[in-house]
Structures are given as C-alpha cells and as structure tokens.
Image (cartoon, rainbow, N blue to C red):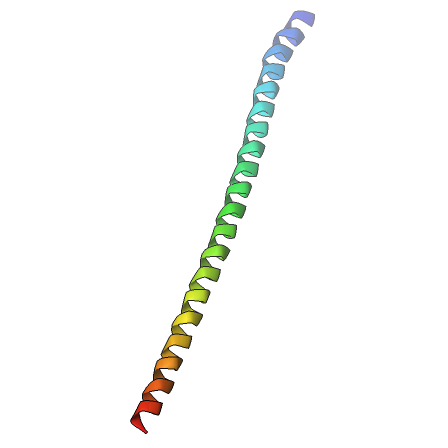
Length: 74
C-alpha cells in the first residue's frame, strides 16, 4: 500500500514541477511582450509627433504661398 502511494506521488510531483516551469515561462513571455508593446507604442507616438510636425510645416508653407499669391495678384 505504501509503495503504490510513493509511486503515484513521484510522477505527480514531477508533473507539478514541469507545470510550474511552464507557467513561469508564460509569465516571462507575457512580460517581454508587454515591454515590446510599450516600446512599439512609444515609437508610434514619436512617429505621430514627427508626422504632425511635418503636416503643420506643410500647412504653414501652403498658407504662406497662398498669401504671397494673393499679394502678387493685387
């Protein structure tokens, strides 16, 4: 009776240890993906800011050109 309990506990403990390692790996993977997503969001904001700056510059140049054209036409 005692031998069958031990023979059952050894594989069960081994399975628990392997499951624990897998869970730890999933946790590390999720943290890495979270950090990657945060870096991607930061880069996206920087890209958006650069694009907005270029758009503002283009709008200012177009407004200046319109104003110059109106001045020249008078």
